[in-house]
Length: 328
Image (cartoon, rainbow, N blue to C red; front, side, top):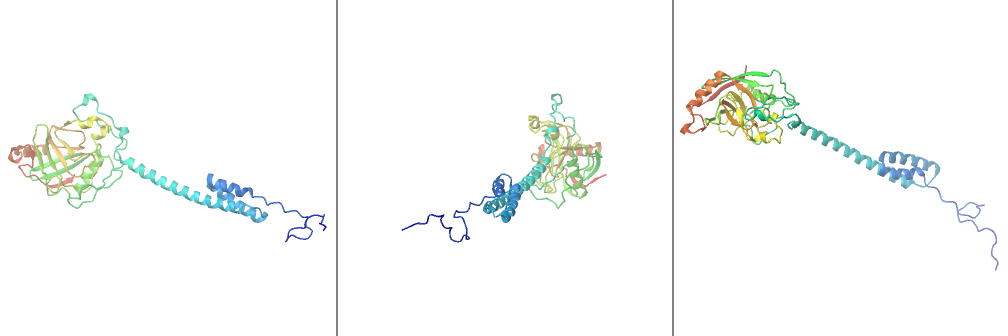
C-alpha cells in the first residue's frame, strides 16, 4: 500500500490551492487590553479606549471585543460610582461647614484677665458677631403663638436700642446692647414687636445677698414657658474660651444689668432678668442691655415688698404685670 508523498491536503472548507498549513492566529487589539486595564485604574480612559478598540476591531477583524466591552462596562460603572461619591462628599462638606458656622467662634475668644476676676470682662467683638444668628426649635412648644426672629446675619448698628416696659408697678426703661449681643437683641425686639410680653407677669423675685433679680418673660407665669425655640449665649460668654474653667466661676453682674435667663448653655428663649443689685452668676448668662434709673426705682419698690412668707426667692408679693413692652 502506498502513501502520498506530497503536502497534506488542506482542511475542509479552505479554498483550493491552500498550501496545506493552518492560518496564523488573529492578534488581540491593543486598545482593548488598554481599555480593560484603564477601566480599573482610570475609568474615563477605559471608556475612551473601549470605544476606540471596538471601532478598530470592526475594521481589522482583530480579537479583543470581549476585553473592550469589559473595559467599557467597568469604566462606566467606576465613573458613575466616582460621581456619586463626589456629590455625597460635597454635600457632607457643605453640611459640616454650616454646622461649624453655627458653633461659637472659639478662635476669637479670649480669657478674662486675672485682674478682671469677679467682674464682667471687657468686650472684644468676636469675628462672627451677628453673622449667623440661629433660633432652632426648642424642647418645649411655644407658650404663646409666636414667629421666630429672622435667622442669619443681623445688624450690630446702632449699638444701642431703646425700649420701654410699662408694668402695673411703674415704667421700666431699657437700653438694648445691640453692639455686644445682637442675636439676643434681635430676639427680644422680635418678641416685643409681636406683643409676646404683653399682659404677662414677672414670676420671680430674688432678694438674697448674692442674687437680686426680677425675672420676667414667661407667658405661663411658672418659669417653664418660652417661645418654642432657643439660641446660644453671647456676651460675656463670648469672651471666654469654651474650655476655660472661668465659665464655671461666678462673677458680678452689676446693678442695672439686663440679662437673659436660661436653663443651660444654648437654652435662651424669652425669659429675662432685671438685676437691681450686684448679683453673682457664672458668665453663662447673656448681658444684652441695661435698666435706666426710673426702671431701677420701680424694681426697688417691688423688691421692698419682698416674697410672700418672708423667703428670698419666689413670686413677688407685689404683682408685676407687664402691660406693654415696645421699642422706642
